[in-house]
Length: 349
Image (tube, rainbow, N blue to C red):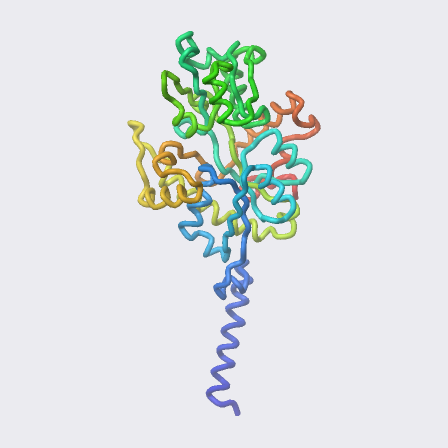
């Protein structure tokens, strides 16, 4: 006959088995129920476009998913892509570029969500126009033909943005002279030396350099595009889809919280900060190593559900193909897996 102590242990054992069965039925791991979150390794650069992820972490949205987000900061997007391809990180965040598409195609990476977009009211890049060019009449985008425009990289998203503007305003794109000068610092030097009439710069850099008669034109006032993305390898999606799904649930809560605190304006165009705006602003600023004041002026846009502008990605692919930077056999769907944001499942399945 069992003693009370033995019966108590049996009851506890039955309760534990029931709890574990419930967790598995809900798609959760025993480690999650036991308070031992699984690591999810995320590769990124220190830039404001990663703010929705940092909000998700700061708000604790990964804990209910049983995940421990581990951030790996890299010096550039190329290193992030390489880390995802090699399996050193599970999830990557990077800017779109011709180089990104080429690497993605070669290493079977899949874009799964939005990181950032260049949108009106949330500029990521700007033309910085010299005093002399402005005096000569370069005061708007119709001054682009025959102007010398400095860019840091002719494979970059902002380069695509420049020609998107030309297309929208029916400008002769062949008459726009772009000069690659490798870095924002080199662009500013070329602008000072009158080697170029305008430079395309990150908006924060352009703001700091807008003095001595120079003027700004925000690219997003004239064209908007998908600037940055979240991605994973096709292999990670195939072998550990549950991890990616759990990451995305937490990330989408972060994008919604970011939109609530950073993206609301009233009818008069005045910013309406959310209840946790200051807390998040200071936390993001520390992570990306930017002053809170600069971050407040240069906050970026992300769809509240992390949805991608798939139509623009298709335009980007065609743009790079037309310039011989991307194989013409590729189609935009090759780069996408939209299943994690509630869209039709991508080509990886």
